[in-house]
Amino acid sequence: MSVSKPVNSTPSDEDRPPPVRFGYDRHTWKEVAYLLTNLPATLVGFVYAVVTLSTGVGLSVTVIGLPWLVCGLAGARWLGRWERARARALLGVRIDEPSPLFGRRRDGGRATGRGRTRAARTEGLLSRVWTGLKDPVAWRTLLYSFIRLPWGVLTFSVTLVGLIVLWPVLPYLARALSHVDRTMVRGLLSPSDELERRVAELESDRGVVVDTAAADLRRIERDLHDGAQARLVALAMGLGLAKEKLLEDPETAAAMVDEAHGEVKLALQELRDLARGIHPAVLTDRGLDAALSSIASRCTVPVRVTVDLGERPAEAIEGIAYFTVSELLQNVSKHSGARNAAVDVWRTDDRLLIQVQDDGRGGARLDGGTGMSGLAERLGAVDGLFVLDSPAGGPTVVTAELPWRERGRA
Image 1 (tube, rainbow, N blue to C red):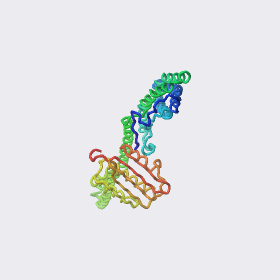
Image 2: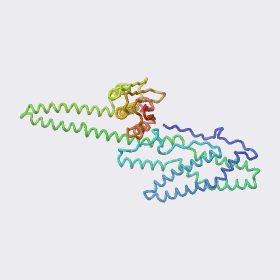
Image 3: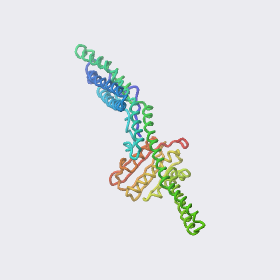
Image 4: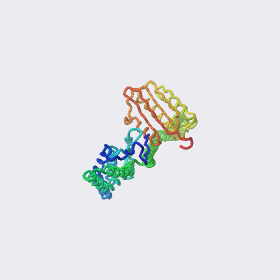
């Protein structure tokens, strides 16, 4: 989970420039350098803003228009970063960098999208284009670049003349002009406020939730079609044949009924497994401790389970925690080569923490095809955290963090 520093609307003591002195100290020369470089910097920014907007609007009637504009807005972000760096170095203005618009994930990267349908991938691409078009940081940077041209010409001219004929009062001029620059940088190049950042995150996370729900529905449909449904169809056919033979060959009919009875048991077991995959009854009835112990008992590796919770978290959080541990223990069984594993669950303040570790060969990666990236995205979608530590040779330690939330308010 990313942490974004609050944006200060007023400069702190260390941000505030030193008092102006009659004379040329290093602060004055830095301000003079900033004011002289305003002209080339604003020329570059103005030209970039005009070209980006004009070509983006002009091409908007074609299929490449909006993607072109999104790329231009992404470039504006880099332009804003350069301007913040210039203000930081020469004016002492310390402004946090805004959160990345794309790819800022707690798992270190987004899922590869393997297994997603073409329609889902197209929808994801359109969502990213729309998010890029609404980027407030980029639009404010373009506005900053557009309105700065006359100011850049003015500051360059005044400072240049001051160096030649007004040098006795140049420190005062430089301080007054640079104060205006400081105000403009803070006002237009500061990161988005917390609300804007959270809205962008929630929009991105909503796409993850939708994709995850669609994948789960496809899995349930596949399991029903290939498993219980096929078995029940065969059962119906077998009972139909047994009914036909009931009078003419009672012994064969009895054998067929006996076989059908076995098929019924298998179908019931498959339906129970399917229901457990949707939401296990033991989790609903007895909570995480019993549910995770049930998972551990089915693992091919001995697993120690420790759950230290005074009360139960929200139902949705319990479900996410359960399936996270379930998938991690499946990875331990299939890929780790471990001899022992451990699951620890505890609460810290308003967070539910889960740690799964094993003494296997290690080397697990988020992009290693073991479902780790999908887990990380699922946790990220509910404001959670996923950390993988798996050096070659082991051990592997996975730490997951979820919001606690009150039960009944998932």
